[in-house]
Amino acid sequence: MKATHPVFQFLVGLALALMLGAGTAAYAADNPALWKYQVKGDFNTVLASLKTGLEARQFQITGEENMSKGLENNKKVLGEDKWNTIGFQNVTVVHFCSIVFNQEVYNLNMDLAILCPFKVVVYNMKAKPDQITILTTRPTYLVARDRNKKVREAGKKIEERIVTAIKESVH
Image 1 (cartoon, rainbow, N blue to C red):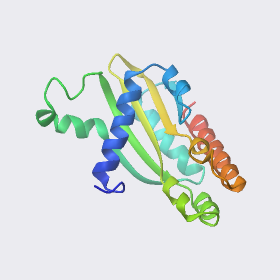
Image 2 (image 1 turned 45 degrees about the horizontal axis):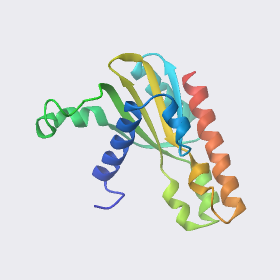
Image 3 (image 1 turned 120 degrees about the vertical axis):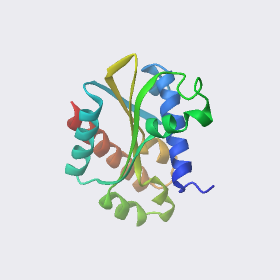
Image 4 (image 1 turned 135 degrees about the vertical axis):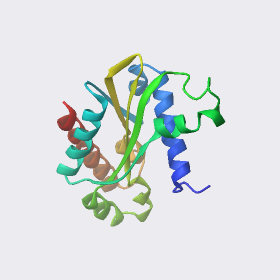
């Protein structure tokens, strides 16, 4: 199955969301590839604010998957007692891109096309439904060892834009 196939993307995003949901807030701190942010509120309100905020900051939403619904719809296949063993309530993945970032990195190295679209996973747990977790993969981590200094600078710039957009959208 190709990495661009929707089912593959769904499964990768789901695995990431479930692994982090099972951990503690320190998990992202222990994993330098991830950036994690938590807010209190209503899941749907936070999700809507996040998407609006990304678009207001010149990001284009390219897709959205309700992963919790997808799993729930398949609980007979996965097993009634196995489809949600950690108690997630909502899990949604939002894919988004930046035309400016694409243009900048494509002109440095076409292999960097792998970075976009970016992905944000938004989830909450049944035990704490008003605690919403937002996480993403850090572009700086993905390009940290690139030999080209301009690539590392571009990674830092886009990560700052993403983090700022998220924090300002859902504060």
